[in-house]
Length: 342
Ligand code: NAD
Ligand code: WQD
Image (cartoon, rainbow, N blue to C red; front, side, top):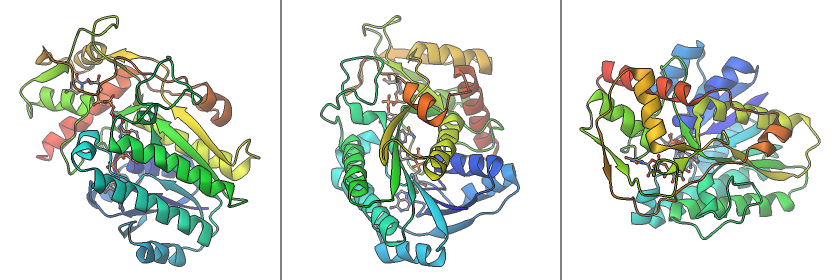
């Protein structure tokens, strides 16, 4: 069976390719335009799995080039659509860049899904669709608030696009997976996040501070109504996220699905504070982290974590990695980057 991964050179896409190669007999092909990655990712995939994969340097906004990949591969049976821009702050500064890329790329993928009759699609959504939440943990039925950024809005729109599209395309199926906070790297430490743009999430900031690329980590506020005053998030190991994609595709391809388009949270269900994350890092790395308490960051919610019962029930998925695994693998990857002068 042949699967197309869009954004396969990126952080989660590459991890998913590794997961597929290691655990299935599927053939994988990848499309990427390296706007936030590079072709070197495929060498790392080969280093870990021993396999070369076929890949295409295509911008998904270009419909004819995207169609040519499907023409060349008429046996694709599933698509996992990761490719998108994902930096929340950048999307606030440059909204049209996000609407242009995230919406048009998905639109073209849906056009190809119907034109080439590809039975199954997995769409990368995000917990950011929930906006400011009123109830915790968040279930898939929790109300979606107004999006806090153009990025989050592209994910809300994306889910609606998939839903409307599947309704009128009988026989085609899709799942939108709402990831919470993916972190960590492949357990070997040989493949992790290497964005072309500056990372702006907590865990890369922690590891970059520990390695000396950054002087000091600022904890954004310690006056929230949480157990230690810092914000709570649901950090989830990227390999667990990758594994859920394999299970989601298997489910779509082999089961009578309850809904032709379903939406599923991917989180551990455990809320972790910023200070707990830092403590876990210090424990597994045996290093003291230079950090200070700063002001709150605009737009941050005090706490958000998932109810993941639906993923357990429908996909038979449960996360295997704990916070220490996340931090240790992230640290191994940062050290590997440093050895290679990144
Ligand atoms: P990433 O930036 O590492 O990977 C995305 C890949 O898509 C990159 O390699 C980029 O070059 C490629 N790409 C972007 N636009 C493209 C286009 N027009 N044509 C072809 N390739 C294109 O991001 P990631 O962390 O792997 O995220 C993957 C998906 O998961 C995204 O849709 C993102 O919004 C979603 N997501 C990520 C997180 C997170 O924290 N990492 C959380 C929730 C959801
Ligand atoms: C985590 C916590 C910060 C940096 C984002 C997107 C979301 C999803 C996941 C894509 C927060 C604190 C951070 C720092 C800190 N991505 N922090 N000092 O904001 O929960 O979610 O990534 O879909 O859409 O919004 O993740 O890693 O930026 O922050 O104290 O230097 O760490 O305040 O509490 P966030 P994050």
